[in-house]
Image (cartoon, rainbow, N blue to C red; front, side, top):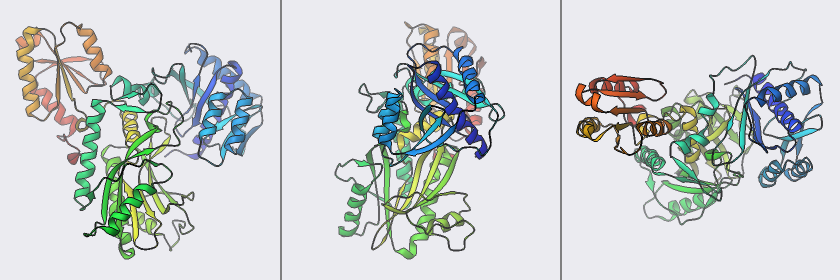
Length: 519
């Protein structure tokens, strides 16, 4: 993970960026800003078409504000008071978000007369040098008109290739790849067929791994839970456990959860209006609780490891039993973490529904950390109850995967590994023979016969959809018994034989075409 001084530096840079934008363009509306260990950014709605050359102007104003040594403050306020302050500053979008937040207190960052809502703000002990360098500006999503993201780094810290954040922005990628579609009322995201196929693969994997532990699946009456309380599902599962003739002590189901933290579409799949989650309740004797915690912790770590996420483990508690790691009197979950030799960070902020909770926090392309899989010990007067989730928020999980890979998804998780673009009707028979041989190897292939659409347009659509391998077959390929291959992420085409393509795919995937083989 990144050093704290990098995070502090970028938090201040994010505040400087917001202040500079508002001073230069008073009608600009701030949406969100944050500094992470990798970078700082601001999402802004400008009253005009933003041009990249303005980055230099904004950076100069940031430098001027820093040079003036304006007073820097971090203030805690109630959301209602903070919203009134933002309305007074004519930052109406921030004010609306503050009115909807479920937090009892929020942090406001202030520099001189300017202030805005920040997620965190650690003030340095001493005045620091100006380090900000603005790197990119881009439209966050074509379905959200006018929303621009400006990203910068500290001169001395994080180096990233040009246009990295734009190319890894999941909001645009999920539309380009035809995975999700935003609803017109901006209340959620529709799962399109390609995302639906991914969802089925992930759910089937969850079920398969659960069956290995003799988990039984049920469906409770429809009652949407909220992110702050899974009581409806927990209550149903407890009733089934207590009243069933056969003691079903491991119960699982898929549940839709309403998300009170969803205030707009700008967060995309990270904070959807509602999302799908897996909920598994394990009822056990208290003397078996440690053993169940260890096996469940291994269970929730499967997906982050298979998908190669950058993640950290957070331990939360609603009581004072969590000790420092060096203390001999460890809590149940601390003992489980120690047994598996896992590093973790303690956050004392708990919740009334659980005693202890382990959360897997996953990084997005900006290095913001988002809660994913979790394991909780629920409060109970009788038997011990564990609640675990392999995905946490399934929409968020896919959004994080798209950002991490830049759209180049794992081979086993896509329903289209190769797209064959057939140039003309004379080449169709040869193309179908190639398709058949690829399919026999377990490779998922789609053929494009749209001769009425230009070759350039068909090729562009395949690139935009982030297809791993694009194969062109025309007269030259038919006569030479070869293929013309374009591999995702490489700006070149090459002639290749079918056997050579098989070899390349085997090398790229390690010969593993399913999630079970990728463990």
